[in-house]
Amino acid sequence: MKRPNILMIMTDQQRRDTLGAYGCDWIPTPNLDRLAASGTAFTRATVDNPICTPSRASIFTGKMVPDHSVYRVHDNLPDEEVLFTERLRLEAGYRTALFGKLHVSSRLAEERRRHPNDGFEIYEWCLEPSVGMDSRFNGYVAWLRANAPDFLAALKASKRSELHHPEAVHMSKWAADRTIDFITGARDDDRPFFCLMSLFDPHDPYQDHPLSMRPLIDEARIPAPIARPAAPDCVRREQEGSYLGRSADFTAAEVRQIRLGYAASIAFADQQIGRVLDALDQAGLAENTLVIFMSDHGDQLGDHGLFVKGVALYEPTVGVPLLLRWPGQVPSGAQCGALAQGRDIAATCLAAAGLDTAAYCPDSEDLAAMAQRGKATRQAAICAYRNSGVDNRGQFWDPPMLSTMARNERFKLTLYASGAKTEVELFDLESDPGEQHNITGDIAYADIERFLMTEIAHFLQKEIMARRPRAGSSIPDVKQRLMNKLK
Image 1 (cartoon, rainbow, N blue to C red):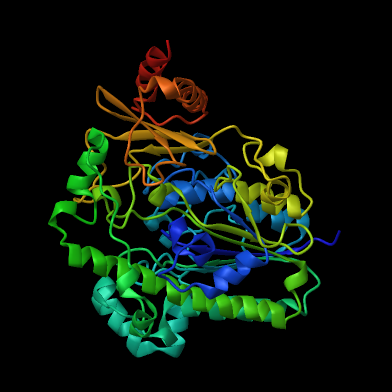
Image 2: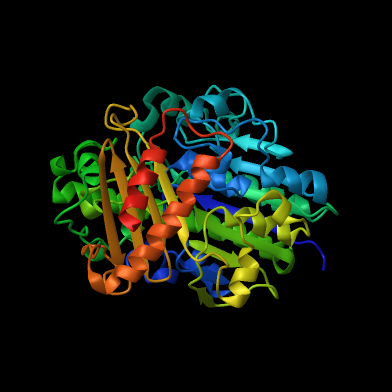
């Protein structure tokens, strides 16, 4: 079989329930919906960590968090780690390109130097519109300098306070334009390509969307946040001090505006993605191109009294859209409930190129094969937060907060730990999709609770044995407390 081109499209901080393909009726996403209709939509895709840097390190190395050692938002991917794009380039002869966000290392590290094994021949990096604007790698700034110097000056002066970026100069438009140019040029190149179009939206601050998008959102249909009557101590701490602010200080109208801006950003991103998919068709390359769409994590948007993302491993944060289209290789118009994870992207791309996945990323599974058989090999999906995010002071939480989640097709168990305190939440996602009723300790669910706790114990053991454990981690203590619970 001819090696396929691979087009990977990523958004940032987009939760699963924001696409029509997953039942959303208040955000127009016709282009992503048609992508789903011609491919497979994974309905239980789970990230490896709910924070950008660790999640993306897993996506691009194919490894679980302990194996690449990027635990927190400001951690850096070690130089010896190899992104799967480098393997595609060196071992399978792929032409590789990045347009937009990478973020497998900290913001400051990526502004100053490229990772030695990132694997991109074309590297037009941009973390977000107003960050790293003086970096020599910033492709968006270079484009603005040539095409919209007045807007560039305004963006440099106002940073994140520059609101409602016009369509013509928006970062999502730039990424789509550059991706289209790359696809168009690929018709004259004999090599297969891997292209990553990586957007910043719909990430906060939620107000950079073009104003022309607001009328597309049916404000009357914006859902109210999910209530949270009681929560573990870690979750309560985040409610009181997330980096976006204290949740109790937001009015209902302000939460609604956050949701409106988030939705408008998604609507604009969908339009730009549609342009790229059309270009793929027009270039005659769609039939031999594997298209992957996903996000690195979600956003609580006020659900459970929380904003953005962090220690709370509820579905709005850890459940992401994941679409796969590969004509003749992936079922068309299908929904797959397999336990897919972010790190599976690596094995999927390597397998499509005919490379050995077991040697490079044994904990990553081929999503194309998963879609065909409708099931993953793993028994549970794991997500681990290791004091990964920052509080409202921009500092890591003190005392540190840890959480580890295991889920199967129906149930989810999360272990929270901070200091000497350990708490457990167990949810039946089938009868309680809003995760409002903690059933831990209920004798009727004792077997599933023990199973998921054992899965977490196995993960913690792996973490302890990892070659680069983080100094000062309290994971061994947490594991001992968990094992005591299992006795």
